[in-house]
Image 1: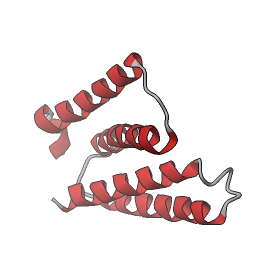
Image 2 (image 1 turned 120 degrees about the horizontal axis):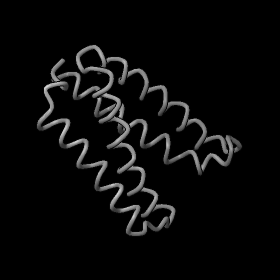
Image 3 (image 1 turned 60 degrees about the horizontal axis):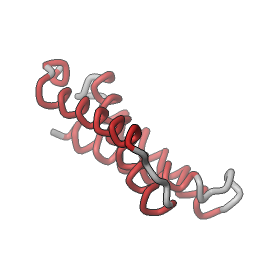
Image 4 (image 1 turned 180 degrees about the vertical axis):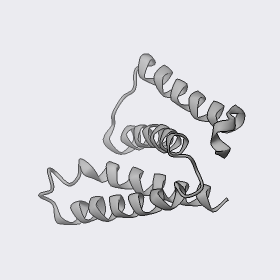
Length: 110
């Protein structure tokens, strides 16, 4: 269970860091840049801990899939990014893939 908690922390760190990349303005704005650097530091530390109990392929699929969905939602609300139908379908397929891995794949248990 700790692996899933570590993975969740890694995902949240990555989503925060990625969401602040735009605000960092190419690393010219101090506070957003610090958030990006600390966020990615937290992300990779906790992702490395998660990979002690979760297979790397499964962990990365979940991390990237959930991250994409969460960053897209934040971009919609914070930056006004619109998502057209193909983008929404693609995000839905990503979510479906993450759910299938977690609910039906034996690979997620080693």
